Length: 362
Ligand SMILES: Cc1ncc(COP(=O)(O)O)c(C=O)c1O
Image 1 (spheres, rainbow, N blue to C red):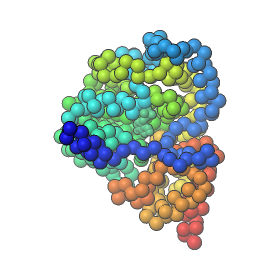
Image 2: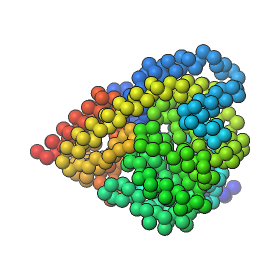
Image 3: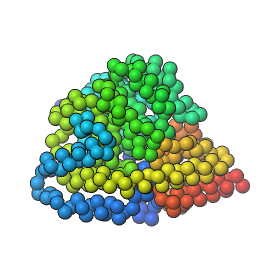
Image 4: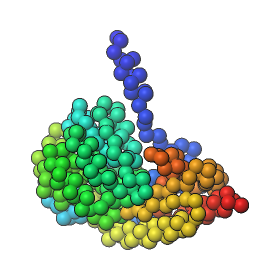
């Protein structure tokens, strides 16, 4: 057998998502953009309600899936014929790339969600990248159009991970209407913290597909529940042919339905995240030599510069504050991405970074 080593070698050469390691209980975790404003009691209550009426000896019951679709329909104000669920939006992305995406060319903005890039590479999809405007992370419209016209698939993360911003709605809408013969994937993992959603476009146009998740605002990252909003035909084919028969566990189906029904509680935490986000932005903006970018999500993108970056990473490590260390990206030096956590967590992060910058300048 001589083909297997070649394939394995090609796969082993791909860049891949690395899970955080060396994390201790004492660490302040601000690296994965979960909703840390939701109390543990919220999750506990959701779990408690979920376990009342499930039987894990059985395969997931149709009723539970029906109930999740019903809750999503209510939450989104969109008929369930446009919705399809998956085991996290990661899984939906994976399935789309490996089936519909097979052999296609994809245009992305840079920087963007690294998992998406990795999965395109794994499946051998040809990627073309259009850098965001360096100063303010906006889209360079004409350049994007020029490149995107040569692809079959477009991926736009809105709000964008890791930069945190949502692009101008008029620009995005114009791009979508111009690129009518492309499959446009809009990743709205963080949309609950943002300014606008494009789900209504997905129900209207057959080439637009919006990806959503319950991992962020709804606090269910551990339950692995995502969904897509797309035209009826895509949603149908995805549900019946592409998705695995039992992609979500009974427990996850129940947890998701119950959490969606408690959106009022979630909404309050979203408002608090937004307030803390403004505070973080203001405090970081007062530190000389670093640049914080305005965010429409539950994390903030910060450029620390070449020298200060090592001082900041050292201090954060010492204070057991764990953020996403991104390093240099597209000419931006020493970047980090920090999740908006509880007030205490955010203060611990801010104090560490303020102190690092002071000791650097003295
Ligand atoms: C932009 C973006 N899309 C999708 C996901 C994955 O979400 P899920 O937990 O639903 O797989 C993430 C997770 O970090 C993300 O940042």
